[in-house]
Each structure stands twice: as C-alpha cells, then as structure tokens.
Length: 298
Picture (cartoon, rainbow, N blue to C red):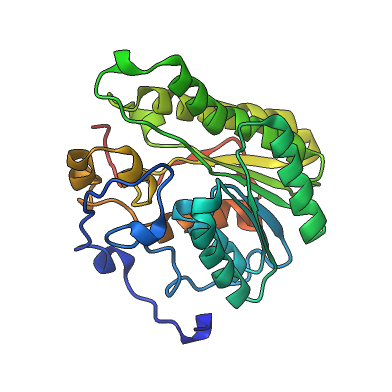
C-alpha cells in the first residue's frame, strides 16, 4: 500500500480504546508478540518532503519508537540505516525495512550490541559506506530492568543500563560527528522518567537524566560545526520493551496517569523526531522536547 492510498484520521480517537495486555517477553521484546500490536504509522503517516535526500542512522529501530521514526523519515524522503540487537529481532527489523523500501528509500540493517565502542564506530562506518554519507544520527536503543526494591539493583544491571543508554550514545555521537557536516543533526531519546523520576526504574531514570545533560553539553560542543543536538523525552509509549521489562500490574496501568489516560503509540511520537531532524528546527539545539501528555508532575 502506497502512502497515497492511506487514510488519515485522529490518532487520539483511533487509539483511545487500545488497552495494553500483560504478556512477559524476553528482553528486548518482539513487536510481533505485542498484544495489541503497536502502531508505527505503517498505514497512517504521510510525509511532506521535509527530509528529502537526507541519510539517517537510527539505533534500536526494529520496533517501537525507532521503527516509527524510520518509517516517518523514509516517507519524508530519507534513506535509512538501523540497528537491532540480535537474531531474535531479525523479523521485526526486516518488517521495518519493508516499509522503508515501500517508501522508495534505501535501507540497511545491522545487528549489533552497541555497548562496545568499536562496534559503535563500525556501525557508523557501515551506515556511511552504505548510504554514501550521514546527515542524522538518532540514538534510540535502550535497556531497562524494573526493580521493586532499589537495593536489588546490582553492579551488572547498573553497568548494562549505563553502557546501553549512555555510553553508546556518546560513542555513536563521537563516531558520527566526523561525518556530520554543517546542518547535521543528533537526536537522543530521553524519557519522562528523567524529568519525574521512577521508584522502580531508578538506574534507567538516572541514565536518561544523563542523556538530557549529554544533549545540552553536546549542543554546546558541536555548535561551531553547525551540528544541532536535541532530545525527545517521551512519556509512556507502547513498545515491546514494556511487557519485556515491567511486571503485569505495571503493564495493565501503563499510561493511565497521562491526560489521555493511555500510553502513546510510537506513531504519535515519531513526528517530534521528524520536526527536530528537519530544517524547520534550524534554531533548535540543546532542547529537550517532552511529548508526555502530562500537564503537571505526578
């Protein structure tokens, strides 16, 4: 189905009655196993040419927010490289690729654990070699592990959380900055937990808070090169990471504390990335855009 054949309706109304169901999955979770399936904009997102000719690398884009961003960027005219964690996510990554290709854009997918600095350098090189250059880096891959008692967070979990959520973002930014020219963009995925905190995701919240500060610091460091660095800090979003890392009770109430009374769908968050990657946001750098559907701290 081409974008010209798609219908476009009110997403708030469309998703109002979608209720997440608990269903434990191994980390990082599969989109195919979600009940209900997430909306990545497959049949709804319509591009307007805001990223024509751009080349983007998006990490963790086999499903969730990353997949929605890949689809949106492709329909805006960008060629796409994505990363995913491993073999179990191949089918989800392949599906993301099919939507990118249907938009008429080039696509490359790389299975990689981004906690290794050399691997981050290799991914950026692969993206540049495959796409010809790099204009946009989207740091999105993440790890979280819920603990009811903060005393149960051990060194191994803490290390994995920060290596995935912070170290990789810095390593990828270092590698990408060599290729991003004037007008280049780095987008980091933060979190509402970095703004409000979370009693059961303490290490995750701390890593996301670090991402917010990393964004502001990189914006200052790269401004003289004409590279913009911004952050998107979503509220609750229905992705495979949720049933893969949260207990059943948490899944059932996930997003209930927002003004809409539900979690966002990835397709509802992707437009924030499109805006910040486009020339429409030419004056934006060091910003944290927070689509949380929360008017007050809760």
